[in-house]
Amino acid sequence: MVNKLSGTVLIHGDGHLAKSSGGGVAPSISVSTTFRALNPEDIVTGAVANGDLRNPLTHVYSRYTQPVRTRTEQILSRINDGYALTYSSGLAASYAALIFYQPKRIAITGGYHGCHATIEVYRKSRGVNLEVIDLDAAYKPGDLCWLETPLNPTGEARDIQHYADKVHKVGGKLLIDSTFAPPPLQYPFKFGADCILHSGTKYFGGHSDLLSGVLVVKALDDWTKLHHDRTFLGSIMGSLESWLLLRSLRTLHLRVPRQSASATTLAQWLDAVANTLVGHTFDGVPGGVVSKVWHSSLQPRDACGFDPRQQMEGGWNATFAILLSSSEHATQFPHLLQYFVPATSLGGVESLVEHRLQSDPGADPRLIRLSIGVEEVEDLKADLRQALQKLQHVKSKL
Image 1: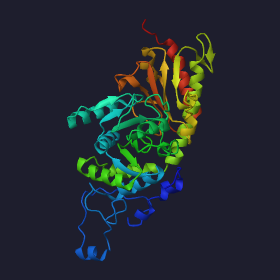
Image 2 (image 1 turned 180 degrees about the horizontal axis):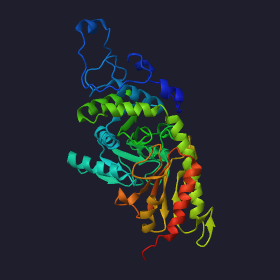
Image 3 (image 1 turned 90 degrees about the horizontal axis):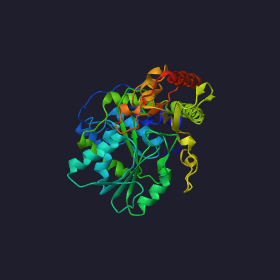
Image 4 (image 1 turned 90 degrees about the vertical axis):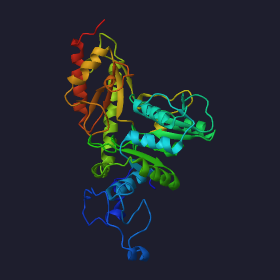
């Protein structure tokens, strides 16, 4: 397994499976759900079947394995330093993790509201009194610590090693939702994670055109159990989505560092705007329009010694949040921008802006989430500047 993102691995890491696909440089879109049965004579001689679900020489039914999805999981396994399995969505992967761990309690605080809803669905489906506790509560055996870092929607980093030590001390497990920090930004297994969750819809997909979820575990036995569960949960990623995801992974090492660098530049620029007093301006933007900026690059070392720089070794997250001075400003702001598309989701090559209240009813009505794409950073900054300037003319209700 590699411990860093490699363009060579992204492009050639599935090469041993590609050789049996007919010789095409780009993989063919495989949409068959069922495959021709093996000749018994070939099975006896071992000519075609190998019984390896991760490296199948033949396929039986697409709920088990499928040509392109298998190749995609090979790439995801290698770049995440573990054994990866794909799902039909990030929330499908979340539910699969709950089925796999069957926790007695879940420690979770904040983060993506969809995962909280999935936990509630799991609770109802199991008919159990599943207790949800705060991340910083005392842990017991059987607990699952569900840690999202960086945090949705603000992009703040949390100390993986701290929670790994805490939950492992009582024999529990640590799941890291690392959607905001795909490779090469963060490698949670280095800090004690037992399982890594990604919404593959976001940075792995990277083009706003597919739904996918990913779970990565450290042991092959765990992967095999998850594969068995997935077969009968039916939460399989579709054939076209598999092809789109494999296509997207080829450029992950080009997209994510670019997005990370641009987001860091913009977050620090916006932070300077937020620290500008009313009546003054910074780089053409009046003070008082932006109240606060959250981003892991702005986090100092905390009282316990956690330094996000050590955990986010490959750069800072490309999605973060700002707080505007009023809800009216937040409502109008996404529609004053030219290069930021007003839409939910994140991680695509195009920059997105979201008034978070539109998708999360519990969000502060002044909060704006920004997902930075691969456009020229100075163009994005100029776009933000002109929109913030226009907010001066938007009246706030008293």
